[in-house]
Image 1 (cartoon, rainbow, N blue to C red):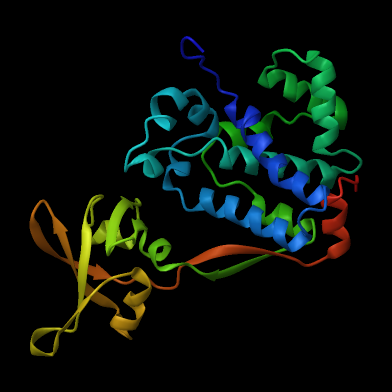
Image 2 (cartoon, rainbow, N blue to C red):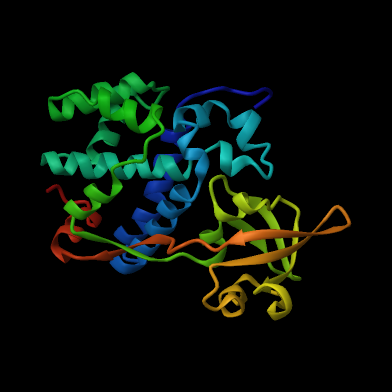
Length: 284
């Protein structure tokens, strides 16, 4: 710990640990299936709501931890992805993929890795070798795509095959607009997410969102905005509004087009038997 130790494997060391963090709560019967799936939903949504996942692989995120993850700023979600949350999702994909091939689980691979590496250092190749030894096929392409690529993981397909229903529900106002905010005293913009409605309108990190103006000309009405949940009430059926924000001692008027339906994931049990086999650590 006297100097930085660079590695591309934090997605494994930290991410796989994060996967087991929640899973072991379910195995210990401290939470039920529905509660566990809520925890997993939160992890998956955190990844899906991070634009940086399209720019940075989780292997690169691991390597850049010292210069990016530990030095975060308002642009971090737009340029990086967390090796904790995406690493946990990689572990989920691997576990469910192994089960789909029958007779092997991630638990088996982890125990085999411990014996293979004798409790000492390991490499990505060690993981690939153990996977091939357990299943009789190469996992090089899968790991390359999930760990070294930036495409979204095949979570929906794998979860549905394991008896989990992947549902979509309306996003919270900040998520729908592409914002991360604080609402202790009014609406303070902390992060503007790349590609969202707020970015297109010209919002910037550090803005204070003062009010919203609905309508045009003499019919326009201006409402003080104390929390984002009030935006839908004030906007009514309007598809665009004017946001009044304070920035650098000035009040700016930003034309904000309200986005069409934005959704987030919600996981639910569809086949209790299949879900139980997975969460109880039984091989399929």
